[in-house]
Amino acid sequence: MNIHENKVIESAVSAAVQKAVDAVPLDEINVSDPSLFQRNSIWAYFERLRNEDPVHYCSNSDFGPFWSITKYKDIMEVEMNPEVFSSATENGGITIIDDNLGLGVEMFIAMDNPKHDGQRKAVNPMLSAATLARLEDTIRERTRKVLAELPIGSTFNWVERVSIELTTLMLATLFDFPLEDRKLLTHWSEVATAMPGAANYISDDYKMQELGKCLEYFTGLWNERAKLPPAPDFISMMAHSGATNKMTPNQFLGNLILLIVGGNDTTRNSMTGSILAMSQNPDQYKKLCANPALVESMVPEVIRWQTPLASMRRTAVADYELGGKQIKKGDKVIMWYASANRDAEAIETPEQFIIDRRRPRQHLAFGFGIHRCLGNRLAEMQIRVLWEEILARWPEPSIDVVGEPKRVYSCILRGYEALPVRINPQ
Image (cartoon, rainbow, N blue to C red; front, top):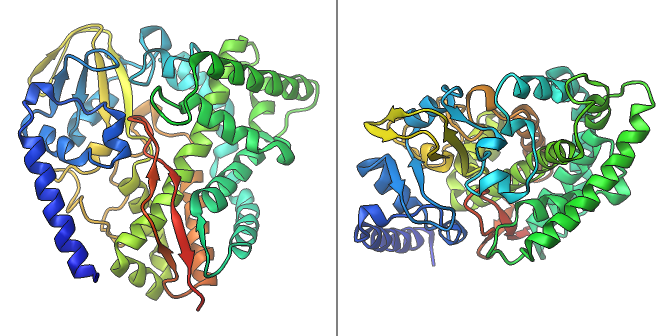
């Protein structure tokens, strides 16, 4: 089947899906259903909400009632009003699941100011431009090694062999975590983010048991580094900062989960998404191979297209009118970044993957305002280095997706469990 025939079939399927979505009564639309994301069938629902009810109240979901914010400008308004829209754990936290994925932990992204800024600044130097410049050679060396070890002409899982390996190595470096135990970081990240109903979800008790092991391991590292002079790693920085050196175990675990998930899942899923995007848009892959300098604009376009963090939650601490709707104090408000990044009023031709887009950084995949992603520059650098090394090793389009991606069951993360690929010999 050729590309044209594929496009015709995809168009027919999309029309059928849109027709089915249009038949659903507006007040029954529930975009928090994780299976919609796992099947990648969420987009028609988001489009309908953006067009008909961009500030939409869902009265019945597995997560309780909530407001869906689906347009770029409305999400920006929420992000720019942290005094009204709280992230604090005591008000519900930052995920659609109450209390930060139901973990019962405190993390600085789930704090309001002034506590938020103090704890964020404690680890910020590890992600400064100067630090990242020093890390780039290490990232490049590891990327070359991982790519050199991939099988040519055989099918393998890109998620496992490349995306997980590279991001876990980077995360271990940021924590100065023993490399031989680095797979624990991936395990703890997946345990923390697994939603009830997902294949890798076992039980709440199992989740807390495994995260207790995470806390125990990192407490050992903390105790060691608190006795030593300050060093350039997350644990040492928190141990020696006045804003974080008196954290409770609950707060320490919360910040660990934040840094592990933020440093692992989001970048890893954008790395995988970049391969899928190129496969689905071979003209863009050819364009990149013909002009490797386009990697600079391709990277933010990949992050927009993937939007690895699909949603973020706020809770209104005062009555507020948004988009003509009355949000009441105590209401749960969900910002759907994945929808905002497909909003045609904010982004030109948002449904297309365009590696030389005029304003590629106009997206909300990193959030906005005081909670904008702390590691955004590191994420971009890791993806950039990966593609620079891919193009250096295989200057012609060579990486083919040879099966359907297996997506995670989540309405919070847009990720992949598997992506079967084959590298063709050149």
